[in-house]
Length: 351
Image (cartoon, rainbow, N blue to C red):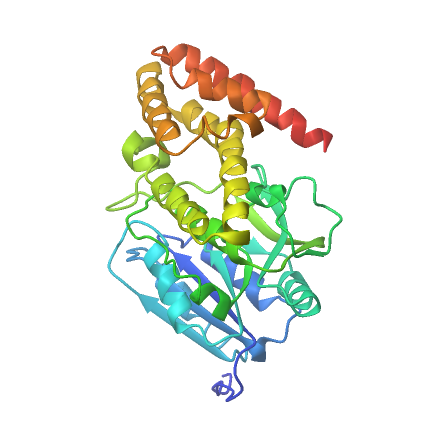
């Protein structure tokens, strides 16, 4: 029998927050990747928030409590909400670490990830650290065109290719942003938070020397409150854009550097949406009618949130996709989406 682990009185350096739902098939791999970190576990706090799983997820999670002398290992369970937002808010509220890292239960970490990112945060006084992503049977959202910079005080366009929230943050910076993960967003609920972070961070650094985060192509959970992305209506699927452009508008209203930066971010974000995000959403639709419905909803939001006013900074493929959103033909829209997506993939390979 292992002796009981007594939590240290020292403040944890890092809080690793894990959100899970029906993750019995992946949670062991996920938490084992935290156990296997080169970072001293006695300075690491683990907080797992489970979104009402009815499988073996919770029993597997609790088995890790005594596996390592953690600073603290906390398991929280809640009624099903349908997304990770409430869990991430609870993690941020309860985190005792100076830094916080969000980890999804179906993904896992490289063994040197947390140590390398904390070293970068300390060296560069960074509020946000982006670690290198590795796609497991899927693409990975690595920063485009910024592979060689160690830290920057100025905004970099390539950051917007990496809007997943699985990054290292200074906890007090994230709490002070004035934005919370929105529980009403069942899709892309990390985009608004990342835009807020990139708009207000003074230093963002990049760890490109080790593989940090392994993104898997896991099946979407099913059950009450958890539906696949393809089943969402256009209004629900695109709801995150209201928060995204609201965040940008608030920054523009602050004047000075924030306003200037927000104008650049709006144009760059439209470029990303039109070249990468919207084509993928269109191509996931099961038929031409569903694709046309999504295109009409996206065209309406493009008009509301200034895609046309950003047109001078849009790339050729982005302009092509923007124009196609206005068509009544789902087949034509899907054809353009495929062409734009292929061009974006070729451009990424050339960088």
